[in-house]
Amino acid sequence: MNSAITKTLLALLLALRELKVPLTTDEQLVLQDVGQQLALDPNSIEQLPCWTSSKHNSPVALVRQIQNNQKLQLSFNVFRDFQLWQEHLPKLKAAGSISILPAEEMLELESIWEEHGNVLDLIYFYCHGGLEEMPKRPYLELSDERIYSNFLECYESTWQHHPLVFLNGCATGDYSPESYVSLIDDFLNAGASGVVGTECPVSEPFAEYYATEVFKRLFAGEPMGQAMLAVRRELLQQYYNPLGLVYSLYAAHEIALACSVS
Image (cartoon, rainbow, N blue to C red; front, side, top):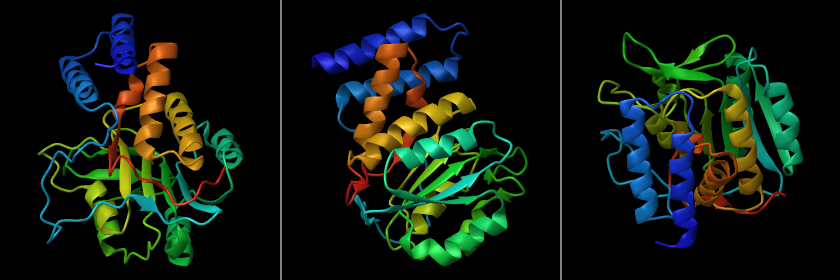
């Protein structure tokens, strides 16, 4: 095992030792699996979906490049009661040459996707997310309404640039056999090149920091998998914080922008 991976795993162990609240059994198992994957293949952090789907009639080819132009088009969809989102936007703008299309409510989102869908490069949800108790169905929550799978199924995609979808909310990528509907699958069917989701609830300060650091690297031309891995290591080695592990990439780890925007 090379020294970089050894340092990362040691940092992870130190972080777990210093936790104020002990990990649950399920959390311990998740971290154990991630550690094993990191040791086996340190350069790849893509995570295969934990379900099988009948929505794809034939194997779907992995998209490895987002077809952006010099000015990246970003659909920013937000839950307005979050405290840090207005501070988050200037950081994104400073990270590169990007055009941000904000939507706080469902009608705004629909209008943006209708008008700009064919040029979107990044679709970013900075909002609530989760799984309803009854029925077991995942959702994303904007300021006025929740987005369910049926909304995306009805949406006729014009996502020609194969945008990457980043779901920066609580448990947006955490699915089990109890949930037979997948927002991730729906985004991929709509033409997305991949989806980033979380495996458990995350606090807004951490979610805001993590996304900012990952986007800086993505905008500079780094592949998404490499950017996520680098931020994970920084959090572990500098702050003894293992929470970067809760973000999963459902895509080819080498997915990147066609041209850098920073």
